[in-house]
Length: 120
Length: 114
Image (cartoon, rainbow over all chains, first blue to last red; front, side):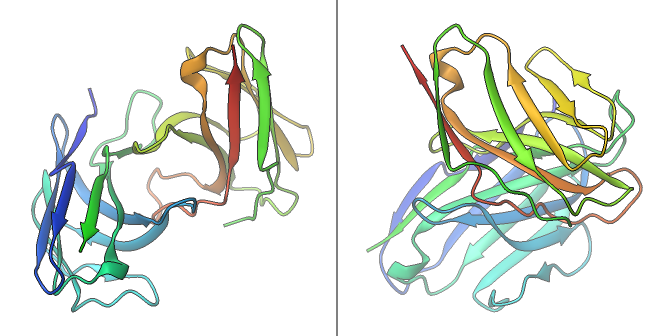
């Protein structure tokens, strides 16, 4: 159980175009999903927190108009990279926080497999 | 969240126990120690977490010192598939509290040698 999927797993797009990445919790509901970005040989950096039915909260330095986040249901959040440029090429990872505590009594956070974006 | 310090890299022979240290000297009373790992080009995977008692699950054991200023993740019989970057994260429990994302440090790159 507790599987998070991302689609697509990799995408190549041309500079100036927009790309949408989906994050789905497959067997649990998640009121909160998180979006991270990871550049080569660096650690994950939190970009934004996505709450179902409300506006996302962005970390300092992340442009909300460039990285559009929609969390329309308890199992789906999308990240759209608008007007992508080569510097947006990165590994984008989402995670989902379960709506209910697990067996151990805590709210676990489950990660998706990531989406590799390359902007040419 | 408290800051953690981990060695950048470690080697371990296949079949031996891998012991990964983490220092978190500024940890506060309500903060847990979480361990995740990230295999190359994959999303992070939860391993284990604990507050002050030692913990064990099917993946690993977590040993937390009595003063809680450091901990050790133990992979009892390392295999080649355990080669990954291991992250030690200190934060308040997810339960009930804020829905904050995780702050990842640089982690330890564990390389299992055949």
